[in-house]
Length: 128
Image 1 (tube, rainbow, N blue to C red):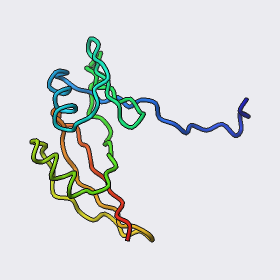
Image 2: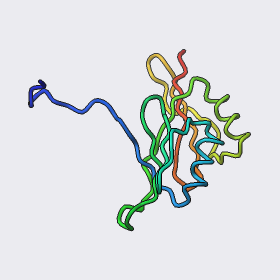
Image 3: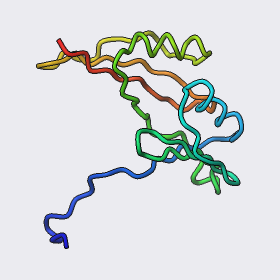
Image 4: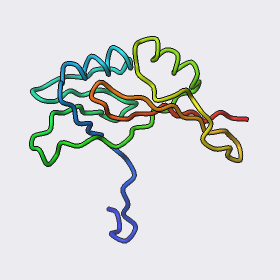
């Protein structure tokens, strides 16, 4: 049993992304991003994202209809990942670029849009 004072959230089980056209979004995430589609139910589709469920869902009410938070996908080789996704028709906001030189690695990112105009990103920690 966890002590109330020491309790803290540590694991994400699912991330929800709003979409307007579920079929188009499923095609984008499975076909263009190559993510593993788990299942689809009315108004929702689920993908495996390294053990975390990514749920694409049509907002139930107008108050819930907003862009998603930016999701940053870890990749080993950002240039290779960028080239692969770009060749599949993924629209990038720009090319991969250096964000910060850290003590032991360089942080690189490249931002892109999904089929519903949500902002997503590739993120790579290039070890020096």
